[in-house]
Length: 135
Image (tube, rainbow, N blue to C red):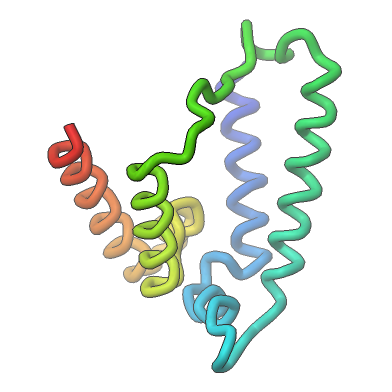
């Protein structure tokens, strides 16, 4: 049952990314272009995501354990360190240059977007190199 729930959750997420325009690099770049051809429509997507996340955290606080798992996965690290900041900078640069972040890029592969395929290949290469360099 958990795999079915995971699959359905992924489909809902993918549909949301497609409907919102997050799989369209030009729309994302327009959102990030504050001093040029700014497109504010993704503010609604971000606001919706924050509302869903906040609601989820409120509901989780009232549960002793998840419905489909034995325990909640929580982050043990709470500090802001150099690898975290560097990763955030690289993520932001990639998002701004390519107009993709990982989730929409993976959905873009499913849609057959060649730019998404190139982005994911570059992302996987970067992840591989980071693992080798930072080890």
